[in-house]
Length: 401
Image (cartoon, helix red, strand yellow):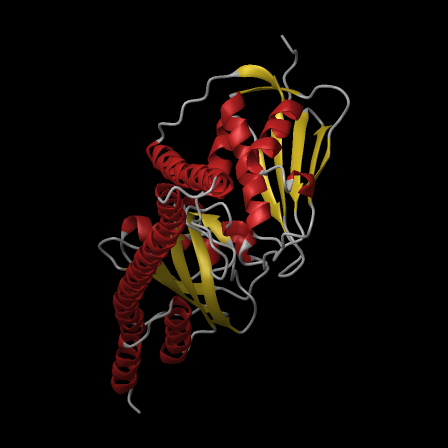
């Protein structure tokens, strides 16, 4: 194959390349073969440095190393935007001779890649004094021009691939958000419809002038269902405020133990209030906080534990201190979580298991309220069927006054 035909074949091959490593490999191999050089390097501009990205030579040169632009010939041709031929490297002040003494190089030629705005350079080296012919220099220049186009194609391809990946990711997020909203609306509709139907049934029973005992039962049922609906609406309003950043914290120094006791009393009816095994210290655990908001945090955690665990299993709640923090842990023996679910448990509308009722707001409210108090909350589980634990850490107050 003639020199010209081989050069055309290389240029054609570069047109279909989509990776930088393929460009440098094709160029260095072709440059060495077409110029009969003893070595070829492909240099990339890296800010104020030259990066020797690839090489094909009879002995090692500088692959993988970086040099300042002002300290090497490749930097010189990129800064001057012109090729250069150096018959004897030991007789040219532009050459950092100490860097070459351990190499085989005696003569060299260097051309910039993209002469208008150089992004790299191609260097050819000979082990003996060598006179580079105009044809060889033209070959190196042609390869440099082809490399410039190939690098532009690689960059364009990478940008296009990145843009497509971002578009796919954005579309996936939008689809997941839409699906989450649909699930949320379905669950909230169920959460509101169920107590509403029960409340309507109680009202109907009361309207029939039922016995006193049935009337009292109907009234209790009505009150309970109205409280449940109010809880759903409160959580919806809180989540909306959180999204808009409108939650206010009114701080005072409060005892965590009392807030926990209040949360247990509100969360459980007298019939099952013994379900919570609480372990509280004998001395107060003071924190600077909005008492009503922290009580809401503990109520949500207890409600979550009750919802996702069998009714005959206990719920453990402990309060303690650790390195300047109050530590509150709520642990159940329920359905647990798999490893993939744990990190997203505090995301809005996230749910541990679609088979269990819940609208995925409570834990999101918990995380935001805890963070507003300067604390953290983490979820732990050994896997499905092993139960879950939620641990809240809040900075301790320095005084009770």
